[in-house]
Length: 102
Image 1 (cartoon, helix red, strand yellow):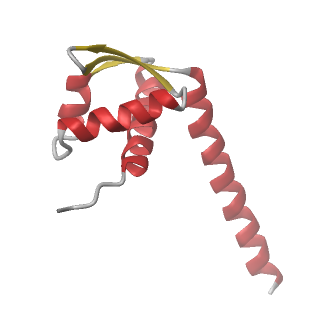
Image 2 (cartoon, rainbow, N blue to C red; image 1 turned 90 degrees about the vertical axis):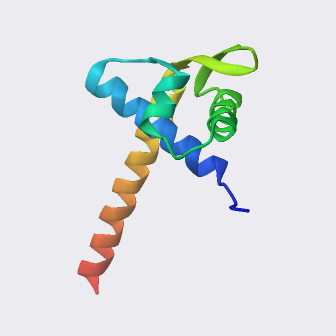
């Protein structure tokens, strides 16, 4: 059995939604959006990843028949991705400065 990293998948989903928001001003997604963009991920894994994002208040999920139907990107989700991006950029700059000082 293959071990699935829900955290990694949910972060990938969040990054993809934020990218879609920035490029196309889209903040509302349906389950089929994730199925079409991530065809190798099982429905139950997509559901678990979206539930994780919802429990962290990064997205809002509306369910129908125990399946996520409508997913809304929250402002906190956008901020999460932007903050992570800033940390990565800051780390890279510090690392470059450290190399220059050697």
